[in-house]
Length: 408
Ligand code: BGC
Image (cartoon, rainbow, N blue to C red):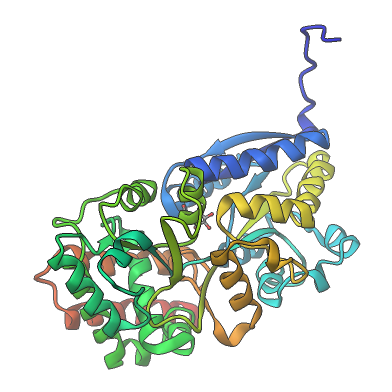
C-alpha cells in the first residue's frame, strides 16, 4: 500500500556523483547504475556537466575541490586519479578490493590505473576503444568498397566516396575530437611504443621525429574528406550525421556504438565497426572509473557499496552493453558481446604490448599537458596556413617546459 508519503533519504546514504555523461545512451547507462544502487538503499544525486571527454567536468571538479565542496563521487579517469590521490583527497577502497578479489579479476592495466600508489582509490566501470572506425555497410557495399584496413586503402575509399558525392568522414572540429583523430594517426603510423614516447614520456626527441610530421600531414589530408567547413559539433551530433547517412565513415571512441544502438541502429545491420585503419593490432584505450572523496566519513559505507556494485559481473555486463564499452573483468564472456565489443575486449586482453593509453582521455598524461597539446593540434587543424613544422616546434617547446617542471 502506498501512503503517498516518502521518507527523505538520509544524507549519509545520498551520494552526489559528478560526471560528463549527458548523451542519451550515457544517461541510460548512468540511470541503470543509479537504479541498481537505489536497490541497495543508496541514492545517486546527479551532477552531469556537459562537454565530451570531460573538458568542462574536469574544470568544475577542480574548482569545487578548491572551494572545499568536493562531490562524494566523481568520474575521474586515468592520470587524474593519480593526481587527486597524491593530494590525499581520495577514499581508500582496499577493503572492497580485497573482499571482491579485484586483484585477480581485472586486467593488469586497469589495476594499475585504480591503484596508482599504495592504495586502491577508484572503481572501474568499463574500457572504451578510441581507435574505432564506424562504417556504413550499405553505402560501402553499393559502391563495391571494403572497409579500409590501412592508410592506402583509406585514400582509395575516400576518393571513390567523394566521386560518388558522399562525404567520406563525419567529424567535428571540437578540439578534443580533432586531437583524438590525430592520436589515432600517430598510433597507425608508428605503433604503441612511439605513441607512449610522445604522450607518456613527452620525449623531445620523439616530437622531433619525422613520424610526427607525417601524422600531421595526414590529418590535413583527412580534413579534405570531411564536410567543408568542418563544423564544431558535439560528439552525439557527429554520430547523428553518420546515422543519417550524411557521411560514410566515422572515427570515434566506441561510446558512439552505444549511441547508435540507442537510436535504433543495431550493430552489424546498417553499420559495423573495425579498427581505425592501420591500428588493427592495437587498442587505444580509455578506462572509465569512479573515485570517492574522503571528506565525510559517515558516507563511507554508501561509497563502498557503489564501488563494490560497479565491478560486479552482472553490472559490468549490463552497463557496458548500453555504454558501448567493454568489461574490465578478465572473466567476462565474449560470446555475450556484439562484434565490436568482442574485438575490443579480446584485443585489450592481449596485454600491454598492444595497448596505447589515450592522450585525449587522460590515460597518458596530466590534464595541463594534455590541454596544452590539444590547443596546438587544434590550431594546426583549423588554420591551414599553420605548417606541420611550426606545429612540431610548438609541441617541442611544450614538452621541453613540462620536462623541466617534472624534473624540479
Ligand atoms: C569517457 C566516456 C564518454 C566520452 C565522451 C570519455 O572520456 O571515458 O565515458 O562517453 O568521454 O564524452
